[in-house]
Image (cartoon, rainbow, N blue to C red; front, side, top):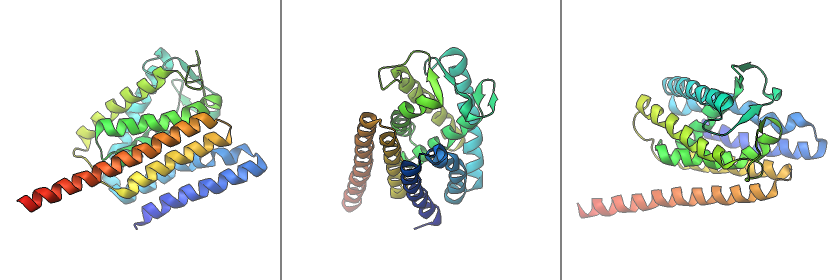
Length: 242
């Protein structure tokens, strides 16, 4: 197994240790530690797995587009609904925390890998992650003008996430054409990352969204994995006929 995937699984393992430590100490910094190191981990993984040129193009495009979408969201409510960021996220530019497009870029990257660079598939994977962490993050990191029916999150947020993701992936596909090869490690890591978010939800007593998201992530894994297996079998049959 390549080093970038070993580091990826070590990242998740350390996250479990951080959560266990948090449960015993209730030190808030421990609960957000994994989110803080997620960004440098993303850069390391992307450079090792896809190369510096890919990383530079992917990050630059996704960061700029995500910032523009967040700017629209904060100032107009389009496409997510009306919300405002808290001061916890640090420095802001035009009312958008500088850190937020970094988070967008990193999640887009791992959704892109697991979704093989396919626009709709990768966008669905982004929404699945959003379903998991938005109820939790909305408690402290941002606040909705009108709380929604999905554990305080409006449904427009998820529709907006899907539209935003499709838009960003469409641009990325122009810059980085061609779908990626299927990677079982990318799919496993995405699934485990999602399930880790579910555990974090459960730690703060968001049990039902944790359960809903866990079911969704397991279903996503099953559908994408078996779709790949079916595709392989069809190709083998065609080769045998040929």
